[in-house]
Each structure stands twice: as structure tokens, then as C-alpha cells.
Length: 102
Image (cartoon, rainbow, N blue to C red; front, side):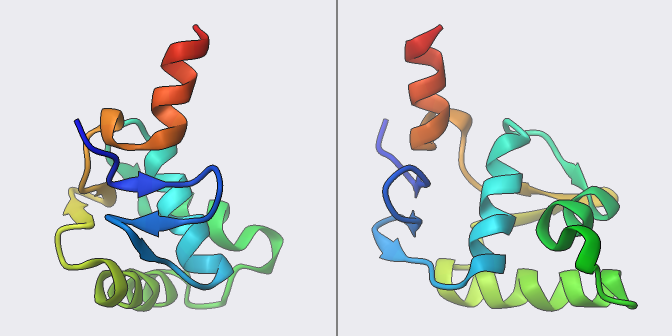
């Protein structure tokens, strides 16, 4: 299985660099979900922390759209009340490393 998301050295989606702290944080938060959907409210907290925008849901939608423009429409999947990464956990370098360590 090939690596779709690199998080350990520099953030890349299928070999393409992902620039910007927030898109990188979004991908990392989704990868930490382990293939499960992450609620939108939780993503807002993980990406912005104490500096969450007043209209967090809209800001998250804009961020997802920007990340999809860079990574492709299949990188982030809308799932119920949240989003999930469009790659299996085995396609994320940090998840592979975690499994190897265990």
C-alpha cells in the first residue's frame, strides 16, 4: 500500500506539498481520526484552538474547500456531521509508524 498522506517530514498529499498551517492541521486532525468521521465542532477546536473564528462552521467549510483544491476532491470526505480523510489509515505515514512501534 502506498503512502497517500505524509505528516512526519513535511506534509504532502499523494506527493504534492500542502502549504499552510491550517490545511496541514486539518489533514493531521483527520488522520488522527483513524478513518472515522471527525465532528465539525471537534475539527474547529483542533485546527483553531483558542483562536476559533466567530463563524467556525463557515470557516471550516472554506478551509476544507481550500484543502480539496490542493489535494483533490477525494482527500476530504463529508461524512455525517463531520469529515474523514479520503485515505485508509495504512496510507498515512504516522499511522504506519504507530503500528510498527506497537
